Length: 172
Image (cartoon, rainbow, N blue to C red):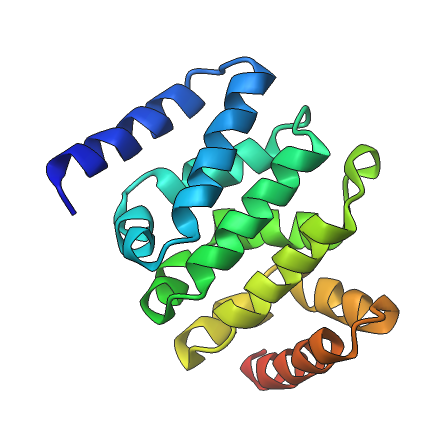
C-alpha cells in the first residue's frame, strides 16, 4: 500500500486515542470496519503496530454504543478472514474484547449481532494450531464459546463453535 494509506491509519489511531466524542469514535470504527471488508486493506490494517489495540480499546470503553460494539466485532471478523492476520490477532487485547462482546458481558449493550461476529472471529482465530494454546488458556474464552453453543439457534455456527471447542481443549 502507498505511504499515504499508512498515514491515514496512523491518523485514525491518533484520533481514537485522543478521547474523541462518541460520535467521532463511532465514525472511526465504522470507517475501520468498512476498510476491513476489502481484502487489500486487511494486511496493512493488521500490520499496523497500534490499530488492533486501538480497536480493542474502543470496544472496552464503557460508553461504547451497541453500534460501536457491532462495528468493532464486524471489523475483527473481517480481518480474521485473512489467514495471515489470524496469527497477529490472537493476543490478549483482542481476545479479551472478543470474549467480552461474545459473552454479552455489558448489560447495557446487549447485541446478538455483535456477539455472533465476536464468536465467529474466535472460531477463525482458532484455526491456526499456533493460536490454540493462548486461546484455550484465555480467561473466559472456552466458557464464552460453550455458552454461545448452548443458546445459539444457528445450527451452522453452533457446529463450528463445537468443533472449535474440541480443537481448543487439547491445548489446555
